[in-house]
Image 1 (tube, helix red, strand yellow):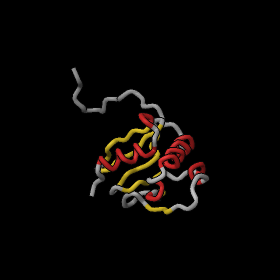
Image 2: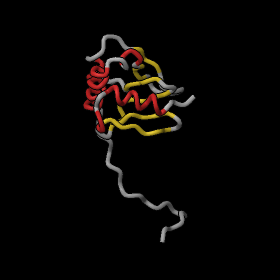
Image 3: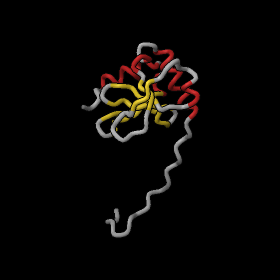
Image 4: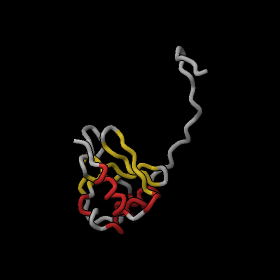
Length: 117
């Protein structure tokens, strides 16, 4: 079952980070981005935050679970959704602890691929 975009919008609204927090649909589910970093996933209408030491310092207890089969465990954050301020702090701390994505280089044409004219 894929996630509902209304639930994803609710999560973003609860975090109170405005336009700094965005989401993108990926394989029927959603990734949440803050400062160009994937900080969380929404799968089956559940929020999964990437585990970091900085984020762990803000939480009392965490439930670890994979967001989808074969994924590394993330923190399942059902209880944090009702506390928008705490959710926002958690996502900001998580983004700050993650490395920036590597810049994308120029596209290289594959051998045998048709050329654009």
